[in-house]
Image (tube, rainbow, N blue to C red; front, top):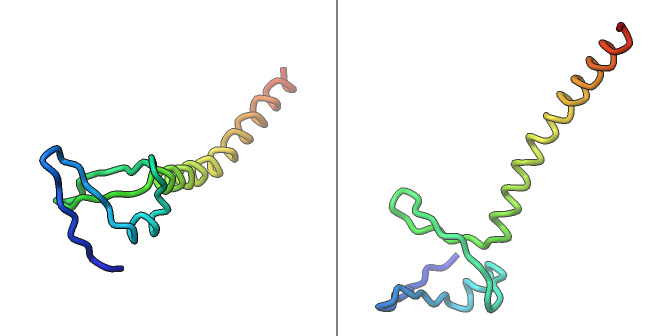
Length: 82
């Protein structure tokens, strides 16, 4: 992973070198998510950010399904006793 000097225009615009755009699979009109991480500018593609969020949700959804199944089973057992 190389380092690149990226000038900032007076309007705050950045131009990413082609090598970085290729590594991030950015097309014309692509979207980057930017955030400050301990004084460092972090850029990531919107697609990668969404993929990470989906992985986190899947992790919790897997655990939640068991809880939901448990609750349904308990409700059915209560209904059968009534």
